[in-house]
Amino acid sequence: MSIFSRLRKRGAEDGSPAEPQTGATPAPPAAKAPAAAARAPEARTPAAPSSPPEPARSASPSPPPAREPARAPVASAPVRGNVQAPTAGSIATPAAAAPAKVPAAPAFRPVTNGAPSAAPRASTPPSQPPAAARVPVAVQEPGSLDLAIAMALEAGPPEPSAPPPPPEHLKYTASDEAALRATFEELAVGHVTPVRSAMMEVRWGEAQTSWLELGRPALKSLRVMATEVGHSALVEALDGFVTALQTVLEPGQPPAVTEPLREKLLSAYAPLATCLPRAFELEGEHDRREPIIVRALLEQVSDLEPLMIDKLMAAGVGTLKTLFAARADEIAAVTGIPDAIAAAVAARIQAFRRATPAALATVDPGATIRELAALVEQLRNDHTAFETVARGWSETDRQAKKQLRRRREVGFLQITIALVRLGDIDLALRLPKMTFTKRIDELERLVASRAVIARKGDTASVESGPAAA
Image (cartoon, one colour):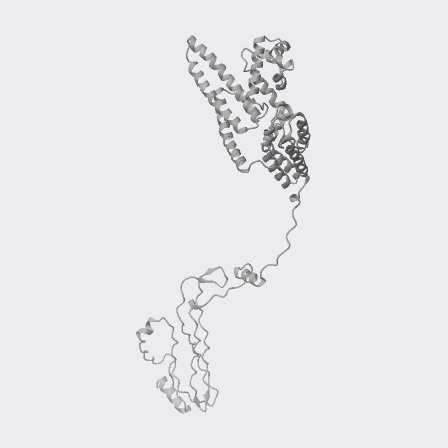
């Protein structure tokens, strides 16, 4: 008897069908899945082999062999590519989807009323959204940008704080005031040139009252600037000088400044020199200008040698006031120079006095600049002619070269006097050390720049007009 027959017999005796053993007749192959199911890569739970119900035993039945737990079907294919990691700011590759947990099938089937109960169906795992639809949750870690933004929004705008106190270096000190006064005085030096020039002629020459009128606009604007910088002493001094100036310019006064008016103007002018020495000081400016002008005048006289000029200076005839009042015979008697040369000296001094009433300083800068431009042009022509004649060796060329050399020297001396009267004393002292070509180039640049300034000054004076401070 085969083993299958014995099992059937034993089952018949016990009243329950015999269970087929593992390795029995294999079950027929399952039907083929449709094409659509074959394309989807889903795992399927293997079906349990069908077996007849086992009758209840009187004795304790032996437990059936444990079955393999069913596998959960895969919801969808894992999403490929990079997704944002839970930590903000990092990119990571998605991890492999973990299989869903499915409760294992019971190891035995309970028997109810002698009949085995149906096997419970495997619970279907809950459907999950695709990986692409999942939104990563920001993890607020220390140093996270999301955490910083959230804290800033919760904190709100910062409360306004009181401004810090000003640093110590911004306080106005005595040194700052001294620097401000020095800068103001530097600007005032060129601004009040017409006033200083007129007062130099009042002090050492024969001034005209009309020259003082030209300085009133400068005094008015200077008073405004002094008020802005808080220079009260200068404002008071300007008011006193303008009052004296108005007295001199009243109708009925003589055209020339007389001795009583001279003293009144000088006494009112003294406080200005005390407040701004560089702008209004007269003595130092006079001492710089007069020796240069006197020597340039004397060097224009023919046959007057440098030793004779030194004798004139040593004899006390080296000032403009003395030369203007000296006669030819007096110059010859005092200095011991020949009468002809003394007469030539007196003639040259009187010609300069008639042509230039304001000897030390110009009261009309525009007219003086035009005169300077004409002198520079004549100097260039004489220099060009001298260079041409210097190439010849004939007697005529030598005589012409001598005359042109003298004419060129006299023209340069006249230019020197014009520069001093304009106030360009440093340039007048520097030019003799250069060649004539460089002198002419330097003078042409000066004339071009001064001409523009003179035109602007004339336009401003015409538009504004003289006005009292």
